[in-house]
Length: 244
Image 1 (spheres, helix red, strand yellow):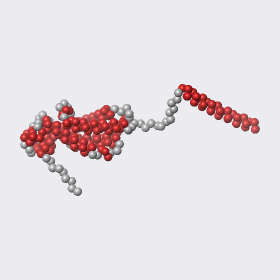
Image 2: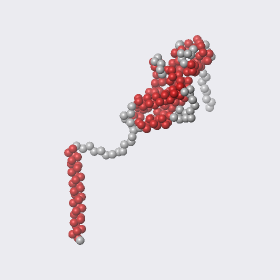
Image 3: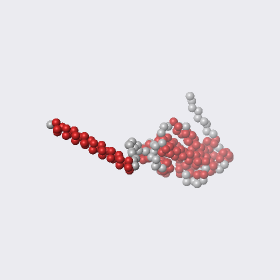
Image 4: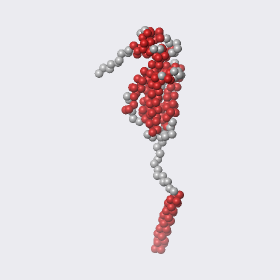
């Protein structure tokens, strides 16, 4: 069976061109004119689809985030265990950021500090993935996989914050090649975090909760049994002496 790749529409070409130019030049320095030339369309066509340059800017992470969310959403129900699902969510972030460096540069270096961006549907699309990770952590606390005193928000911040920091640093260094890929670093990093929040299995022990008078009565029973055992032992010893 042959795979059919959907041909790119004019809108797709505009967004691809804008992503590259915004990421490489910065939003303020990029122009609609150079985006239109890169995409092979007129400036009027861009304004017809997106209205303003800022609308075009915000449309890019909205589409990419929603597409990525839907792809991973189709897989997650088949992954067993909260730790496995957490890894899948984080892996989708790492793959997206690493395989599409223009996207990670745009989002992490430009958009996350943009106050207007945080009020858009694009930011909500990114938050949806972050909420899914939060839900996985909460499920782990609820089913006993993680400690009951674990803070789901703090754990998510540790995981997401570290990944974002690594990619920001990577971009600031000019995206150098590494001996270890960023995906290879994910599992060791996750294990460090998970080993600190996993619930410890307690040994099963019998615990009796008694009132003071009941405890005293129980203690008297043990003393009586001990005296009885000593008396029986003494009688047996006396019988042996008499026979001799």
